[in-house]
Image (cartoon, rainbow, N blue to C red; front, top):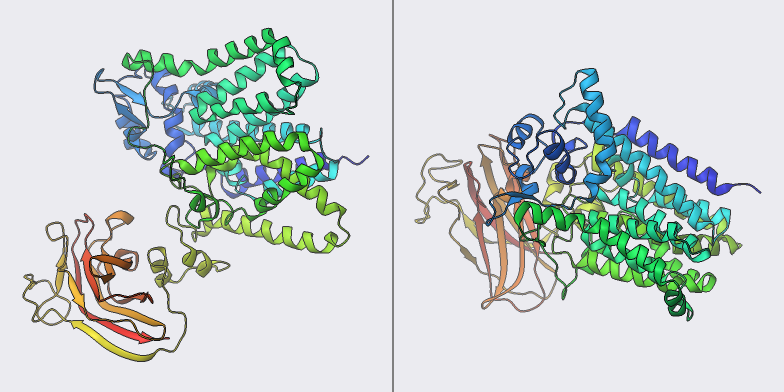
Length: 595
């Protein structure tokens, strides 16, 4: 019998290898693009702090490392405990322990080949990258093994191929594989394998392995304590309670193994602060009563399905899984339900610079089951041989295109994507400059003609008594100036009222910045609010420095689609947003027109 799943596995390995070595070798990148940067540097910080510098509580070595390698948020990866005065790592120790073998190899290599043995030079970057890639291969191998217990070779091959080629799994294994998600996917794949073997033939070996794997997942990310749901409910039936009673000794082995591994974090906290439990994420937390389901699952900023639409077939495949493997469906649904709720409840639901809901990656070890069930259903349909290869091909192309844009193409803007910008740049080779407005303002008038244009407000600042800055200027004798001392313009009230048709505003202005502002949150904002009494009916804004280079003067505009509900005025003002560079604005003209 042809081993389709094995062929698919090697195709996936080939893609991951080519992506990692030929397309975007992380270990060759510098600064915040290096392997050990941003969150990864936070996971990893335990190792050089303990094994090279012997300074886990003070981290006195890190400012020099930060100055030399620029790995990202720097000391933000740890916080200073007020009672003890010691620094405490933000992230749990589990990922650092998984990095440990690769770190040791790198440290030996750095000394042998004459690289700085400082924990961040090339051998360390390379070792963590290559180790993460090998871990991805291991995870895929075990994922294949567990799926073959329930599905045909062809269905397993299709599921693996679709996930690797068609989802953000590719990015978080071949490029950003040092993030926790890749490693957790592998832990989950091995955990499912161990669970299946345990219920086939209960033994202390597999009981201990299950405890260690669940403990290690929890030690890597505390929310992964829900991994315990997998061995507890896998293949659950009415005999499970009696099985647990008969196997109490084995359960004890698993529990002790779990606690032995997971409690490592508790001992670290006790050693560092004198307290057994520390909330190391400080001001970050969960919105348990208001989870961000829409934003995480289908949002364009960093949502799951817009960037990995092939996983929609995994969602649809839940019904097919129910028909084919009913005993698996409820355990998988319970885990995925709890996992998704926790993922969506995190207050920073976009998870930093996430490419398509990165926090979902480890759950793919479970999503593969309904995806394989869907593939099985497709193969049973006579008409599918024509339709689905085309659909799957388009979705794979979609994922590969966006993955490219996230790294070399440049059209994916991390943390800032919007629906309007997403569709504006889709399929393009290069973005036009003014498209950046769509990262802030969802309204765009796409029709070439405007009718019933009327000017409702103008300000050239020549007679504006509130503007005190005469120099520098753009036009005439006066311009509005914003700088470190002048953060807000006056608030201007514009006359406007609803019309019968679809009505729009266009705000035209001249602007010049003397110093380019690269931090998005510090860019000068033009803010327009549609008001009804004290209620804000609609608010739109653009950031000017997205559209301006240093020393450049440009004519800019923004558009606002006016709401149909009642409003009595429009307010407009500019906010420098904490910026320190000077910016000039002049000749603001506001027009109202109809579509």
